[in-house]
Image (cartoon, rainbow, N blue to C red):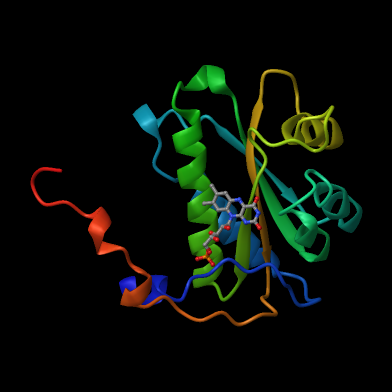
Length: 172
Ligand SMILES: Cc1cc2nc3c(=O)[nH]c(=O)nc-3n(C[C@H](O)[C@H](O)[C@H](O)COP(=O)(O)O)c2cc1C
């Protein structure tokens, strides 16, 4: 797994090629069984493939989301915070599970942070997405994961990239 993980990079350029239904099903099924605190599974997922909606998602913040318009698919990760106080952790694990499984299926993906981000001076990214996607009151949006066949090659990580100074033995 480590050998594979070193090659897993964020992919923001996608081929104009749809992702097969079975692959998307595998990705969603994997997210639904991600580990969560007290097994509360506070998450919900919106699988987006509509080009117009992907285009609108790409405008959820001024930087770091524009590539969503060229992705063939995206999963919006949201939760009902009332179901679990650590919903952010739960959703993060589910979101990364989506990324790992996508990569294992030969796909590229990238996380778009929307929680605590602004679309513009007046509107939060989360508020914008809730309106756009018809998300009911009481839910919170964590992030969007774009998915597609990658159209860029990035180098794999090496030990040069690893700051072993961050690792402490027995005590800090
Ligand atoms: C919590 C989180 C938020 C991120 N938000 C964004 C984002 O909004 N836009 C973006 O293009 N990439 C985003 N990324 C991807 C990171 O920029 C990327 O993982 C990091 O630069 C390392 O690159 P790599 O994934 O290719 O190893 C995010 C990643 C994480 C884990």
